[in-house]
Length: 211
Image (cartoon, rainbow, N blue to C red; front, side, top):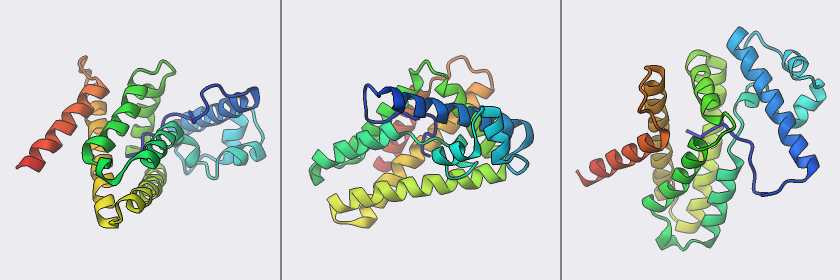
């Protein structure tokens, strides 16, 4: 599962124009999320989202290709970090532990964020579970991202099947961890901690591999 919750990118200190672009994307995304929760994706139009966000439809389409995409903001910082690591890594360093480490840094960043990202992730996850249109878009977005990562890793390893197994295994572990964490939060479990749950999922995977 791609962790769709942030619009960070590789620039550490964005200029004013970039900050405004990000803010506009966040405002549109929040408006879409609110409306999808109230009315469902099928009954919400781009015009509805633009009106609630206080922007024009053309501004919406400069930010997102579809209304469903607007609630599934990709984690560009993760993608940038992964690409940067991969470019400098030798094939021997591209291991399960190494790729999981990149994913875990993204999880830690999300878990320690003070911008409401965790709460937003829970809301989006609930939409994915309850709204078929959003679920279809989320699965498609995940597939595109995983295919992109797999292709990059395959170029380094020279074996597409190994690259796919590696990336999809790590992504599935994260998806299971996020689902488990969300279930704990929904049940009122005060011990619910995303990083701890992800680390436990990694440990479970190791036990299965050893067996």
